[in-house]
Image 1 (cartoon, one colour):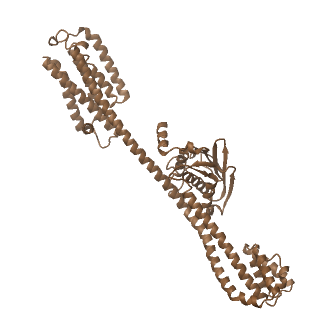
Image 2 (cartoon, rainbow, N blue to C red):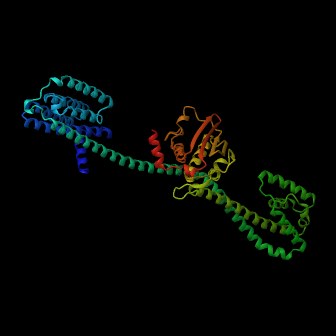
Length: 548
């Protein structure tokens, strides 16, 4: 059967041009199949007519076959399908009526006009609907004329008193039915091919959509690289500096502390211990201006208490955070060995402070790395929905954008609900990234960024608002269109919001936007029972196709 369809397709290709669409090529094939089927019937009836001695009537079916062959040859040479189509429908409608009249009417010819009806039905596959309606009018007129003249028509004598009678009907019905069956089979074959092609295209579209989402996600990560690198370099730099300071302080302590403790009195050791104890909880994070002012103040207080080398002592005390409670340490500071004891205390306090700095910096770096991991793999397995907390995912995105936010953006969180929903959170993270990134860009990284998360009935709603200039009213209806962007070339692909909407709709949610100068709000609504509401990419495409 496949070979027969291939042969039909090759014959149909006689009318094809390189620029023809698939629909036009199929029209060519239906025309050729209809013409070939009716020509076969014409050969049969022409031969029967000759065998019955009806030489002049036989010229009508034979003539149909000859005209069809010439018409198709001209079509092959000229590729003028419209002309060939009109000629073929015309002769397919008229000649069966003429042949019926030449055989004596409806009964004697076995209702030969049924071939015209076959042509009329088949013309719907290669003619426009309007043109087919015109041919229907022609068919109805010819039918009326046939009914009017039928009483006056006389069957040829060679047909006998009753003509071919039942045989004519049987032959016409059988051949027309076989032709209709063959054309219907071919249409079903084309339908199967179209379904296969549609299935392959849907798979390609699904792969392309996945690739686009991945590409957009990588683009978003690329935009974060500079900020994340800065965020990681800051704690790493602090760790490096603290390690260097600790090494220096440790060397000095190991060199001096044993001899200092050996030579110190019990009162001096107690004073050294108290000094270190107080420095444990002291605040040492000061600006340069605050530190200079505090040193001057401490120096004046030390001078008033007759402490030797008041300036150097003030510097040491301020560095250890001991500017507030000087009096309790005055006995130690007046000791003849005060400079050595104070230097040892400073080195030990420096070790403790550097360790604290290293711990804080390491925690910060770990938080950034965890945020990157959570962003890329928020816990879904094999693309299946898993429970997740939207508030945590939003915090992850904010952590990644911390460098862009911390300098000029006022960040406001309003997480009245944690937003626990089952979802593909790796996909939803792409949405939150796009919305936060767009908001920051719209404000030029200066302004107010608001994130809210609330639950209303069976919906969880996430809002991202910015204080940017707003979206123009003529742009607003198009912002979710694929590849539409108002950003400068190279700054955006125009896919972010389109992909975000596709992801949200696949979760049976919705996204909307309202904008005015000074405030733009994107609202994402997701069903709280996300597992039951999720769709696959194929489901989403099928729904979109049926909707359009």
